[in-house]
Amino acid sequence: MLPRKGAHVAHGVCRKRAETRGGKTAAMVWVRSQWQNVVRGFWFFPGVVALGGVGLALALLEVDRAAGPDGLAGALAFDGDASAARTILGTIAGSLITVAGLAFSITVVTLQLVAGQFTPRAVRSFLGDRPSQLVAGAFVGIFAYCLLVLRAVRDEDDDFEGFVPALSVTVSIALGLLGLVLLLVFIHRITQLVKVENIAARIARETTQAIDELYPEPHGGRALPEADEGPDSWARTAEPWVVRPERPGYVRSIALAELTGVGLPPGARVHVAVRPGDAVTRATALMEAWPRAAAEEAAERLRGLVSVQSERDVSQDTGFGIRQLADLAVRALSPGINDPTTAVTSIAYLRDALELLAVRRFPDRLRRLEGDLVVHAEAHGFESLLREAFAEIGLYARSNARVVLAVLDALAGVASAAEEAGAGRRATAATALAEEVGRPAVAEARTERDRALLEAALARAGAAGGR
Image 1 (cartoon, one colour):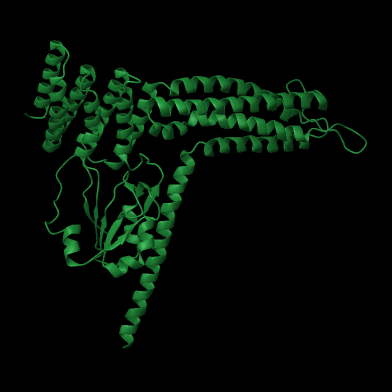
Image 2 (tube, rainbow, N blue to C red):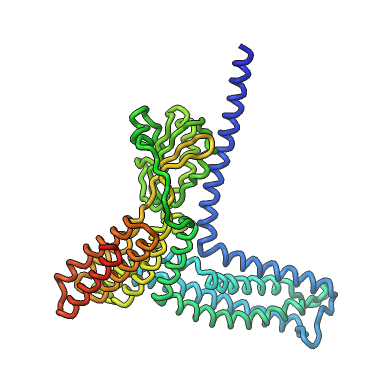
């Protein structure tokens, strides 16, 4: 009995350690998700810059105090009295807070323009523009600097010794001039940000960065799992424990690599039923796990590995970047805007992203992790991303030969890239979508020239895909 008891105790200790590690893992996933929200929001970086102004004021005041009553007045430093210092500091502070209010008003108006004219989903990346945040934070920081220095200025009387921080006032003048320069920089930056070409380029840049991080390997062969491996096979042997979210929203990220730390026993099976970017409700199954008893005990830790937020993010969700570019094109084709040039620009960036995806290897859905833990994770396939990019644009652009030609040329480029990488199935999917988009456009062509151009583009797409 003693060995069995010892084994039981050892198993309990290991299990307790796994549960503790799993709780820490889930907590870290939550912290990372919240930290991402904070860093990508508009207030964090400007707040840090503004605190820098506060720190600078405190540091320079200490330098002025250490210099004595006469301070650092001289040829280069401020040499006026307390009244002049107050006037200068008050003027700079009042001007900068007015400018800060103007900058925030311009930002709000710009956000309304971006959301209404282009796509609301582009607002998140717009708010994360670091130069704009730097300027906004600098305005607030200079204002805070002047207030703190103004508070330290004292007239000489019977009770107090006069104090005019010459160095601090001198720096405030320099900061005031810097604020004027930053105002011009801010206006220039905003005018550049609202250009649709720059909006599309920024979204495309974020999307391709996510592709490089999520799909770093070139396309190639892979070992196929055995036929009986997968959630359908597991469900036939036993009933799983289903993990559901605590709130509705979008799946922001899934920490698959952390599954080994949630405390499941060796040989456990987990089916991750959602993908980053999926909309979920409280009744949606996030995960199904076997054995049921062990999964029930680890349910909270399993749930903590899936971050559900109110909005999507491109870091693990390439489809979100593709969706934004497609929305730009679809919105441009609406009768109220009627801007086919913007649609063609978005299609060009979509082509670049899909050509990149066409030559990359997608992760295996069935994976074996440390501790004999088998995971089946749902994932976006190439064909679904391809349709996300071009199918809806083709539907709305059937009567516009120029936009359909851009779509067909993009699909021909994707098919050609896939053929060169040896991904014949992807090339076939691109060619099939070209037929789906092109044939209705040929039927609705307004002129014989448009019809001939569309037929030629269809032929190029077919040849690129091996047809």
